[in-house]
Amino acid sequence: MAPTKHVASRSRPHYSLAVQQLSFDMYQWMGPEAQAAFDRAATRVERHAGALIYAEGDAGDTMFRIVRGAVRLTVLRDDGRELLFQIYHQGGCFGTSSVIDGGRRPQTAEAYEDCELQVVTKAQIDGLRADHPDLGDAMLRLLSMNMRLLISYFAGSNLDGIVAWLAQRLEEAARAFGRETEDGVLLTQPLSQSEFATMVGTSRQTVNKALTELRTRGLVVNHGRYLLIKDLEQLRRFGEQGLGPG
Image (cartoon, rainbow, N blue to C red; front, side, top):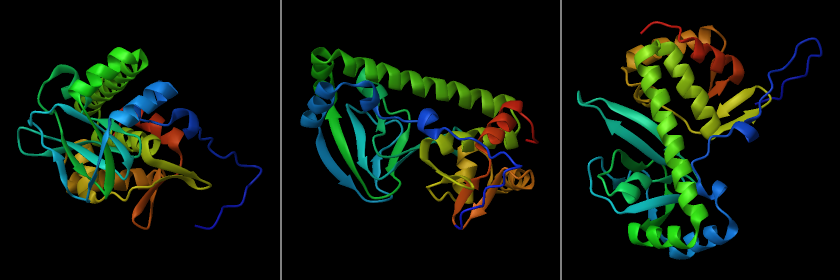
């Protein structure tokens, strides 16, 4: 992509992804000793793209941290529709709820691309939490982040129109795996129409209309297989208004 020339009379949107980045890595709240202890305890496994890591409803006593690659977390609705919860990238930690409460897996996790994972058992986590209180605090912070996201998803899917709800999910995706460019924020993961639909729990036809509306408003454009968000702050404000059909 050719860099755009700066026009003095036109103010460019300001992005601060370094501050607002959405990270699911527990290490951001852990000290060096706790990180080193986690690394020593973890077993490393590799999974090819498309491989199932665990299925919704499975019993589970392990949690995972992504060393490289990406993992897709989805929830299957009662009517058979699939909802994309999140795509986790390097550092992302998942499977924590089953390690904490011993319950069954609330989501399905599959390798979105070839990945390497750290795997730690519940017994190991219990020992690490006793020796390193900041690791226990990090798990609580991660669970709190997930809870806040779920509240946001519930409100968006039930109270907002599809266009605004899609705008909210795209703004979140930009913070999770967006790369800042001179033209806006580029989503570094290519998402298909089906994946956009699973992000908001609707049909491909409906999400295509919502994407067309966002393009018409000048908020997003296609950049090959990727989506470019022209103005992240404007997209965020649009999503918060709850506008749009659906």
